[in-house]
Amino acid sequence: MQSSCYRSLIVIGLLLMSVMASAQNDASDRLKPKWLNATPKPSNSSFVYVIKSAMGRTQEEARNACFDELMADMGFEKGMSVTVNTTSLDQENLIYRDGQALEYSESSFQRKSIIKGKEVFVQGLKIDEYWVRQADGQIYLTTLYARSQLDTKPRFDRVELTEHYGMQGLWRSLIIPGWGQFYKKANLKGGLFLGGCAALAVGAVFMESQRTDYVDKITKTHDANLKRSYATKRDHFATGRNVCIGVGAAFYIYNLIDAVAAPGARRAVVKARNRNGRSYAVAPTVLNGETPGLAASFTF
Image (cartoon, rainbow, N blue to C red):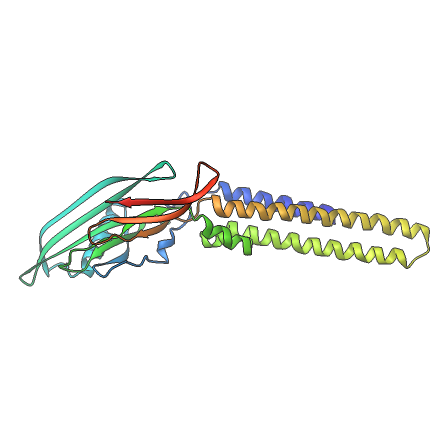
C-alpha cells in the first residue's frame, strides 16, 4: 500500500513538472489569453472593444484580414466607400510598477472615408492578438481592438496586458486547491493540484481507517503472533497516513505559491481615463519587501 502511495506521488510530480516545462510550438502563447472568452467592458460609450478573427498564409496577411473585418463592420465595405485617409501609429510606452519598468506597445489607427457622399471617420487601437498555426500551415489570428463609434471622438481606456493575478489566484486556491490555476486558465496544472490534493486526502483517510481497524483487532485477540502481525500492519498504515498528510500539506502550500506567483493566461486590465485623457490606479503592494502599503500610478 505504501509503495502504491509513493508511486502515485512520483507520477503526480512528473506530470506537474512536464506541465511546467511544456510550451505550445504551434501558437503565439502557451496559454490562450483570457480576453478570448471575456471581452473587456469599456468605461464610457464613446468606443467599444471588438474581437475579430481571420485566416492567412502569414501573420501579416491574417492581421490585414482582421483589420478588413473590423472596417467591414463599420460600413467601410467594398463598393460602398472611398478611402480618403488611413493612418496608423505604433508607439512604445513605459509603466513603472514596484520600481520596475514594464514596456508595452500601443498600435493606433484612424480612417476617414466617404460613404454615400458623406465623410465619416473612425479611430481605434489594436490592443492584443493571439494566433494558432493550423494543420495546413495557415495562421488563424484573433485580434482585440478598441474602436470609436462613427464620427465620435473616443476617450479610450488605458489597457495593460499582464500574466499576473496576485491575490485573485491566491484566495481561490486557498479555498479549493487548483481553483486559482483554473481561474488563470492553467487548466491542466489546476487539475493536477485538485486531483493530487484530493487523492492524498483520500489516501490519508483510507490509511487511518485501516490503522484504526488493526488497533481494534489487537484489542480483540489474545494470540501473541496475531498481535505482533496486527501491530506491524498498524504501524505501516500509520506511516502511510503520515506520508499522505505531509506530502498533501506540502502540495497544498505549493499550490498556493503557484497560484500567486506563476504567470497565467494574458489578460487585459482596463484603467479608465477621465475627460482630460488622464488615468490613475491604486493597488495594494509591499514596500521594501516587507511593509504593506498602497501604490498609485498616474498617466497624463
